[in-house]
Image (cartoon, rainbow, N blue to C red; front, side, top):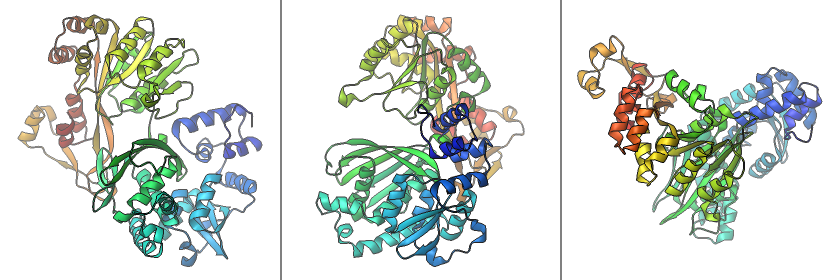
Length: 568
């Protein structure tokens, strides 16, 4: 493969066998970085190769055979030789065992790091054969059952291991060396792998490890709400948290100061980044992992679910040569995704784009991304001043937090740059008064600000248990609607089912309000009019508020009245 292409063994096989040329290979690598999908899947989806031919090439590369799992009967004794957590994490299944050895079926080339972890957990020599991905998934489900059974089984196994392993039994009291040994034990590794696997498969955005005096709680945040999983024994808290710290390259001996790190893992063929935050508490370290799975994140404005009128306005504004565009909303409402999508829209070879982020969440080809770290002195103002000497066309600032950052953003806009940033405000109009509260001169805001996008994420109703009902008069009054407004259209809610964890919701959808800075709005800004005046003028000029957009989604059957009440 040519030196300027990133190495991917599966893609290298496709090039060697003449299935793709160098240009196609680069396009596939770009798509892999954008979507997070494994190269094997991209090759198959692009129809450059059939699955059988790809399996044959990978088998020849690894010196192994291709097997048809549908024709194999695997004894339970063989299935039991590897934990369900390993099978699910790496999408493998054992097909035969020997003395101190096991043969696993896989659908891709196992990277060396994963190979080392598998061998360590299994304490066996491992060899591989190739099999179809769908067949492996079906057999894993058939032999290992659902995820909840796996959690219960592994917790039972952990309890048994505690009684046999002194390091685990005393992991709360031992020294740093003992903690390191406990964190490196096979049961702890298996358990942490399972927690990470289940979180990714449940579409969790965050994983919380929380030690309390008498319990150790692990929770997932899914669609904005926290859900607790079956808790492990309290005395394993230090070992489990230390395992997470080892994976993220943190100092396990440091338990008095906050630490931040990152973990890169592969789950069922998907490349996942985990952002790790460690915080000392009274009863141990609280650890939160932010799950960054680019394969489930769309960085395309067309697919964010914006109303057509809002989308068209944004398309026009992001093409402007200069000015400031701000996205507002609470933490976790998708502001960064929206900004990334705007940048991708204008990311062409003739423009220089720079971002300052704390931290960088996703890598985007063609954009220079700078991680902000105040602990090392690299602050937003420092980075932005350097940006102005880098001949940029477009700049993205992760957040405008203070007057100094705001002044540099305005200076950039006044000198011919397009600037994107975020603010934490309740709505679009509130961004203007927030800047004034920072003591930014109103005339500077009026002369540089082009638009403000306010957004929220609402949970969407589970399609499997979606149920229609007729809203009562009190509900309609809450939404400022009448019977004539809704006609014969029903409202919907989710009854709760296994697919949505009995919540009635599955997935989230954005609601938006887009405030374009017209001449009338500029006059109100110069007059320091309060948020209410700005909002009402924008409404008079056609802006749909967050609540009004939320009501539209209720009427269209996407979400519930309760979500509108809670978030708008």
